[in-house]
Image (tube, rainbow, N blue to C red):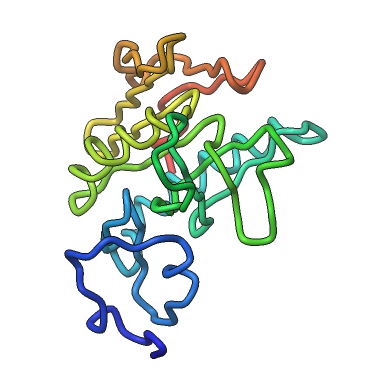
Length: 197
């Protein structure tokens, strides 16, 4: 049976990427550990402006660089580093912005495996998901840097993966500070410039 509406799915069931590929409906969703999470139909204008600015800053810096930057919607398929009994993919997310430095992870459908850097812009409808579920899956899957951008307070929270595979939070970066990235060598931006859109 063709799935053309989210209403046809059991939101309590567990789904795989193979299931995800068969769905043909307008609603935007992410699969996190096999569970469906609805995305807002279209992010707010400010969210889009901030995401676009971050994408532009990375894109400008990465010219003629093997690392590539992508903006949502862009499917990232994840399987935890500690493999379970099945190799099926149960997590498909669409980060606001991500940087992938391994060209072998990029295919016609998006990214297979952890991006090197992920940026999520918080908004009222997604804060819990970004700060709990996505934090955990990005950590489990080996994302090296995770940025949470907080538009209401003009703050960027940066988490870096340590050698034990756990995110370590740096101090919050405020408007007057320069934000750099270990993943993207030489990249730096005044935090105020991210929000001044």
